[in-house]
Length: 232
Image (cartoon, rainbow, N blue to C red):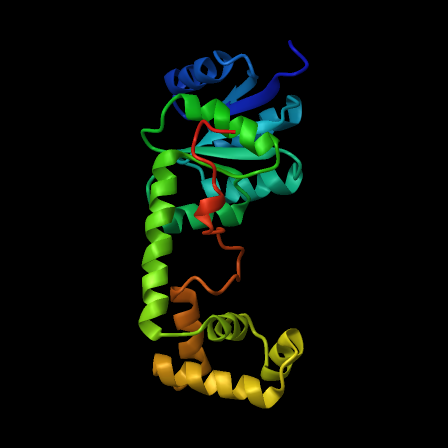
């Protein structure tokens, strides 16, 4: 085995799919598959027996809770990377995988070359989104931007709304931005007026609908920073 090759474990319920993934990865010369598993329990067992750097797994494992599996795996092996493939084009699903600790995201019908690129990207410390998933992120970003503009909130009002949704009080917001409490109260009144919100809970719901709440570790939607698949 070449010491420069990334050691990968493949998890999928179908043997023929595992074989295909092995061929995709090893044909590039940069990866070697050192173990395979067909379900979550077998994957955790194999993880103890075989040293590896990246876990490449299907987004669906019949009979297994994939989100629970990823959380358990990342807790046990925090330095190892997880790449999930065959993900449906659904932003909420991407969000859930991200919250579990997933590092790479490969969508359904992705090009075979994207698998090895994903492994390389996560090994270099980044996140990877296949091209078809990047398109979904762009759409979600601009839909969110349009919704923000619909409320006509200023940049400062968006910042304050985000902090309110994440539990900051007026005094804490004032200290964070070196403002007076009265100024924060004025911004808050303007936000309530523009969004037609009479309660804090309503403001929180609006913030979450705009992607301003970072509770639970949301996906970074700054998609301009995501390199297209297959680029350096």
